[in-house]
Amino acid sequence: MKGNEGPERLIRSHLQNVQPYAYVAPLEAATAESGVPADRIIKLDGNENPYGCSPLVKKALMEYPFYHIYPDSEQRELRQALQSYVGAPFESIIAGSGSDELIEFIMRLFIDPGDGVINCVPTFGMYQFSTAAWGGKVTAVPRDSSFAIDVAAVKKAAGKGAKIIFIASPNNPSGNVTPAEDILQLLELPAVVVLDEAYYEFSQKTLVPLVEQHENLIILRTFSKWAGLAGLRVGYGVFPSKIAKHLMSIKPPYNVNAAAQVAALQSLRDLEYLQGTIKAIVAERQRLFDKLARFPKLRPWPSEANFILCSVIDHDARSIYQELRRRGILIRYFDTPLLKECIRISVGKPEHTDALVAALSDILLE
Ligand SMILES: Cc1ncc(COP(=O)(O)O)c(C=O)c1O
Image: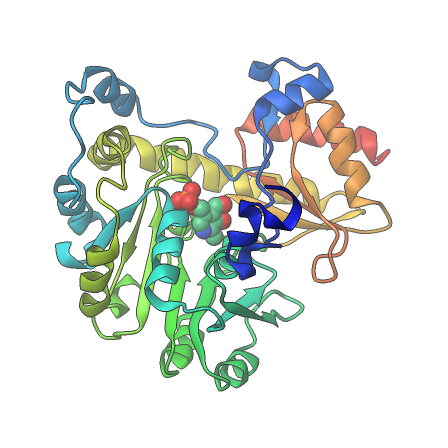
């Protein structure tokens, strides 16, 4: 078969031209480009945890004897352990292979081709990406000049029949938290509100207690950021009971692998250690902010997450990104209509901040 007679013609029409997700390039690519060895690269582009996971996780992964057996499809031990950490009942908690997978499950549950999804941009790219993959129609409602959500505009857009409203709080890439009053207003709408608290541990602000009172509120969380498990892929959601039941019934079996379940469980058993690293990151966030604010060409935005967005004034954000990359320091840059000339820097260890600031002084000639 050739040309449009081939199997490509059988691909669902809404997937013929989907934009791939703009993922963070692997370390090896940066090493190949810059010549800086992987262990000396300063990786501040993925909002990962520079301190890594708990030492108990490494030990438990070494000693786990059942890798040859399928993991518990119902994730009982993990969900039980999450109950007290999250403050929500067992039945309402469901884990995924990263919170990204839970976004996919939510789409699978609610979105028929053509259904509406509201996205408060600029924000995390998965909401747009997953909606497109499921044939939904995204209405992008811009945040205001301080990245607060425009509640009136969301309500207006929802009036046209949206099924899901996505809000990341703290938002990626701006780092600001959406106040509870705004979420409460959105919960009055006949739509499901997905509140993504991926960075909760760095903000300490959560609306989990509201899930029991609102049958249209879903909270998403992850072990990727605070627990240093991005590479193992484990996240969870807190769902109203009726939605949780349906979601459990469509979830593929064994979606969270055994290693991820072991690692997440051990993280919950080593909260003291992990809370120490969270504290270090929060303290370093302030130190990084103060240092960035001293550059006349940079305007850092206050952040309650583990990264800082910075507007670049009278300079090219892309060239800062490239110059840093050449020196083995990885950050993100944005130059889109909603994020003109911006860079986003994940909070690293103090020595990462120092190396970054020295390189920025050199690049910005200050
Ligand atoms: C707002 C937000 N939600 C979810 C995720 C992804 O989480 P996970 O690694 O659990 O898929 C990210 C990662 O950058 C994020 O910024």
